[in-house]
Image 1 (cartoon, rainbow, N blue to C red):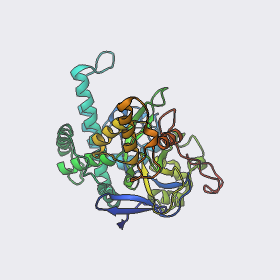
Image 2 (image 1 turned 45 degrees about the vertical axis):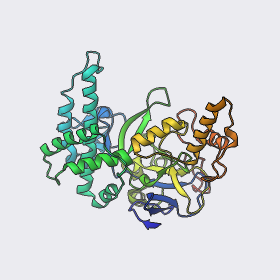
Image 3 (image 1 turned 90 degrees about the vertical axis):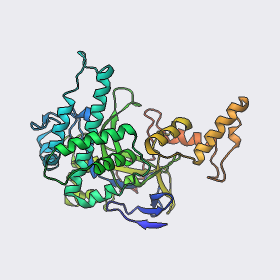
Image 4 (image 1 turned 135 degrees about the vertical axis):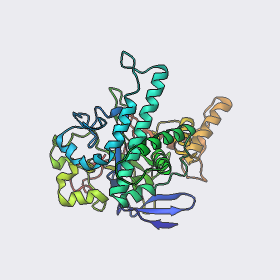
Length: 402
């Protein structure tokens, strides 16, 4: 096992690497339950094309009122966000203008809903526009922050084989990029395909609750978090992901409340912001920081793993999703136990699964353990992963982190 490094890694974790697993995260020291393992600001982020009209391109707030007059494809919630996003948007504006021109060619029904062939064409146009935004913001990162771009481009994409549909989408986005001149490095087809594959394998969806149903989450934006993306999947994870995207927007709360969770002082952009002024934590990209919190006490050397699916998803659809979206199958102790349980139920109608564990893989993991794990760590309201509150000693007497 070889140790590697990444510019935004935390002092709490090591980045390890093996030929079989690639790069992954290990606890660098004993970790207490509820402790923040790693916090990271996004290297790049972009809106879902469906949300451009009502979401701030900078802070992702839902009160966007000031639109770009040149492209019409970005809006901001305030002059502050617009000004802070000026340099980033100057690079991406030509791409957004081309994207908006394509979207405006898609018709809608008189009631505002897209149906039939028009609906399918509209959905594909939105997918292409979102991919174009991903490519544009990744290209902008390459131009202005080569070190951060190197971290993003080092994210593996080998397993994320693009489908024929995605290959076609990449080709059309590349054609659009070729027609756009913004003075930067050329965006070739390999770059487009690379950005698409990395988004598919390691991109993070930034979601919010849609309507009254807490289980329905709306994807508003996407982002690259190179250090957080190193965490492997486990159906019995050791960490949970948290963010503050639905916290009051900048200006609606004091700067002290904006920094209400402890942040590792060695984490990339967050360190700079914390040293210069705690108030900067209220502004993007620091306000878009995501963190991993330990579900239970971990020994030094324990792997930091998250679940790529909700914990209450059963084994068959969970396996299908991992294969389709991430390109791998899972044969962990939980999957094996649940498949054994299904087989025993199917044999004679009785439940014999409580007597079967998978000692060769993980001693003590049986159906009872799995059920208790899901009951303890899966939110019954939204299916999100729960983590314990940190002790007052861990957060300096402040609030918990989860």
